Amino acid sequence: MGKVLLTGISGYIGLHCAVELLKQGYKVKGSIRSLSKAEKVTKIIEKFINPKGKLEFCELNLLKDEGWDEAVSDCDFVMHVASPFFSKIPKDKNELIKPAVEGTQRALKAAHKAGIKRVVLTSSMVAMLGEVTGDENINQESWTKVDAKNATAYLKSKTLAEKSAWEFAKSNNMELVTIHPGPVYGPSLSDDLSGESMTLFKRILTGELPQMIHASINMSDVRDVAKIHVLALENEQAQGQRVIVATEKAYSFVEITKLLKSNGFEEVSTKVAPNFMVKLLANFNSEMKGMLPYVGKKYEGSIANTQKLFNWNPIPFDQMVLDTAESVNSILSTKN
Image (cartoon, rainbow, N blue to C red; front, side):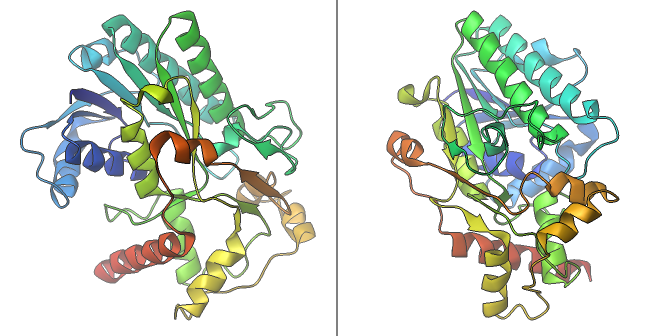
């Protein structure tokens, strides 16, 4: 099956990709920012599959050249998952844009130099939002306009990183597939609730989030995202494709809270924050400002091409939400 350099292995999506790769028989070389994390990551993965000597680690930094050439030298594929993500607006947009773009370029350049067969890159539906007005027909041909009024630093980082990848791949005749999830949920393999997805569910389940914004978009189960990443490595038809991995239709965040409430999660609030209030608070709150591209809007993308390419159907929305909630609750109960 070959060996895969998997960047960002310790992250929410990265851990799921690692387990899925090992299940499918691939050898995995996971990149982490410090090798001191290796033992912890190994123990997490061993809860779900015995690596049987097929798991190793290397130290890489998205903003440094050191180690990239050596990391890919004995690999057949690169799966570039590592990328910064914050819903809050950073004081300096380059906190997001620079590591996203430069990290992608380092991964592509090292892969090309090593003669890697194919690179699978984690992008996002936020790189497909057109004018960021909510009326875009999202598909693999659509791109977010980085100079659009509502384009945040995160939207710009994902769009510019992906564009730089396609430019490099085309000019160097490299095989590239980009994976585009919406907001990613589903069970966590670790006990880390600090990521954006797990933090949101934690705040919803504990009643810390009294109101949800009015917004809708296709949502993604992390298990589907990992599965398609792995299938994209060797699917001949996937070459050159921008692949949306998400639910068939857009769902609102209020639908999440209503589903949880109806399934016995008593502390969940189903109230909706008025759009004007969110926009007002955005003037003083960086997290609210990060939500502005979505407030009062619906973004819907087609997954028909993905279904056809991989003979795949997404995990149902209800299952994704309830499995996420059970996972977060389980982690919270062990910490209390």
